Amino acid sequence: MTKSVTITARIAPALAKKLAAYAKATGRTRSWVIESVLERNIDDEIAVAKAVQEGIDAIERGDFHTSEDVFAALKTKSDRRRRALRRKAA
Image (cartoon, rainbow, N blue to C red; front, side):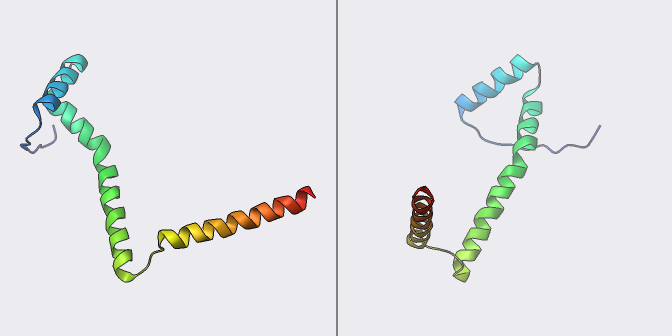
């Protein structure tokens, strides 16, 4: 058996009720359910936090595009595409 660490967390009563119901329905302990959910999701949460920090760092370096810049570039690209399609159709 692998070693385990005990943690304590405060959760809303409604969430505790869902947890208990799910554990009962699956024949698992609440601890097993919590560990399973954490195991499946923690890497995604870490990736999101890392991406957010990378974005913050980029902004602090001035390495970003404003929404106005992005929309202007998209409009330019869209206009070029429309003109090309019109020439092709003619």
